Length: 452
Ligand SMILES: *Cc1c(COP(=O)(O)O)cnc(C)c1O
Image 1 (tube, rainbow, N blue to C red):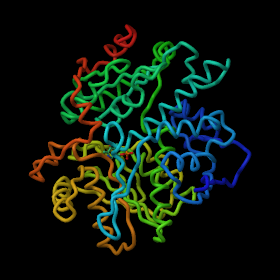
Image 2 (image 1 turned 90 degrees about the horizontal axis):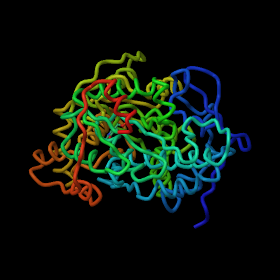
Image 3 (image 1 turned 45 degrees about the vertical axis):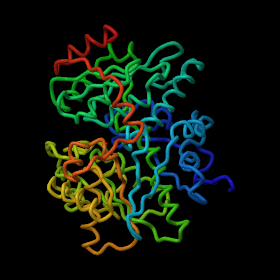
């Protein structure tokens, strides 16, 4: 097969990124290294490149390189992009057709069995490259530029899946150490075990508090320059452009596989919390990929479906649900959605209750013999409702985690065991260690200063 070609409408000039709240622009690698824009907004490409791809490519890595080339053209990461994609995308995102018109896009074949592995690995490779470059070039402006010999500290608060994906991506990577904070007793037993199972350059702190407490502690540490600078604190949360960009690749590849089979543009259904995955799907559509409607499926946290219906964005306190990775009351990427899709065109949203999640898990197993996780169940139910409203044609549901990660919910409903995939089983067999900590910013700061 010939190499995949991609072309951009604006060849030559490197892409600039601007904040959702301002106009000053930076290069894409600086946007990735910085995370949050200095004015508190989120970075987005100044203009979305139009990408023309000749086919789905031979692998996700090849497709990702072709797709992202116009974004990185002229940037200091351009030459490294192919290697970054080859090392980040080492596992596939296969389509599992349930019947003629509906498929699951399985995003859980990475080391921690959830879709966040793709983005975390791309971010780790990217930050690794930038750190190596700033070690050899004097005067680079990258915030993560720790210089040769210095170690960057990736500090993350997690409600479960993000921390594990980030830890796995940076585990044993020279030049980085990872500190994870999670709310003790509020993640699933398997998630907790996974978080503490890394060791080496990964430290795990179980905080006597809520996820919001953990996030507040992390924010306070970042706000303290006397800590941020000497420790080279780096963020890896879902607002980073370095996490959004790679997530376009699996949506693009699935859409191009459909085109190759002569199918009409598929609808995509994306289980949604902070809107990172769904925004990547919308960005792929904006870049010209053959993607039809995008359906945002939330759990009982219904801020996004309400915004799509009414046009009013009204954050709410989050409520706990069975799909805990989507328990978000003020989605961090909503600002990007409103900046790029103010008319909410080609978008629908549905909110799914815990009761409907349970019923959908049972029903999907009964009809298709397939176990799904509670987040994926929100997607399956949202599609059912969209079909009832008249939606026709092929539809692809993002299956965001392996059901074995949520065995305490799924197994009792299905009355059978759901065996974990090999990578997860291996992680669960390792010892797991987490250090207890009070929900106290000063205690975290002291711990970080002492070097853990
Ligand atoms: C993080 C997560 C989501 C939500 O993704 P967002 O990008 O935050 O919208 C959905 N499902 C699972 C399993 C997750 O871990």
